[in-house]
Length: 264
Image 1 (cartoon, rainbow, N blue to C red):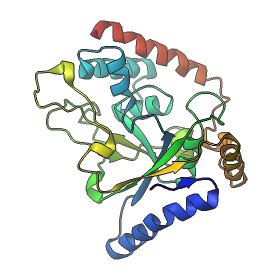
Image 2: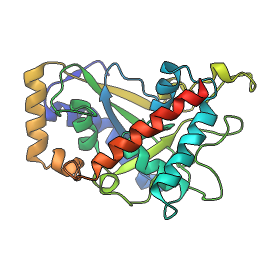
Image 3: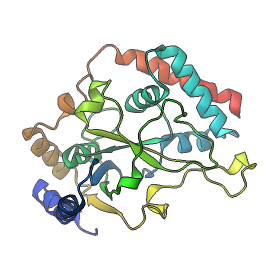
Image 4: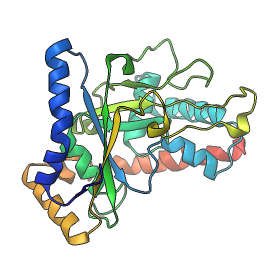
């Protein structure tokens, strides 16, 4: 979509055609999952799991082994009460780079994230965007504790799952996670393994749409005020933002990233 969103009303009107199509699909076929998912982000960020960018930036030669070691480390750090899928979901929601990409079934939550940033004051400058994904039932999967959330790149596929509501952020953000996969035609060439952005994946290419949000600072601030009037602010979307336990996650994130030195 070429329109640049400047007001909340414009945003709601922009997503309305997709919602109408989603309602028609639900009425005709029924569904067990959301027919529309949303993701808000900065314009320059890739629509791609952070682990891919992190691995490339740090010249990781064995990205899958590195990722599995991080999962093992997190498992030891968080204890045995969580499944591997729970550990990955918790890590993702507390800023640790994984092969999962956050989505939400709530369009307002996505807009808030588009206007905000991962760390810092949620009134950042610069253009941003909201992506909409029209889903099908085959996009979704149920986490299987017998299978690792970090599979080998051969024979795996991109899937979406709803994490168990074990963390207040997941509940507040109406969270869904998309597990992306490493791809390369030569299975022995680990140096060039990569994760392609969602919009370049032919599975989703015809079902994914972008809405651009203005980069005008005062307009963006006004949009945040509008969202807050409907209850979408930091205290709602990040209900534990002032919790001292988050300092623990800062340490875990650094320890996780330090493992990279063994995989260069």
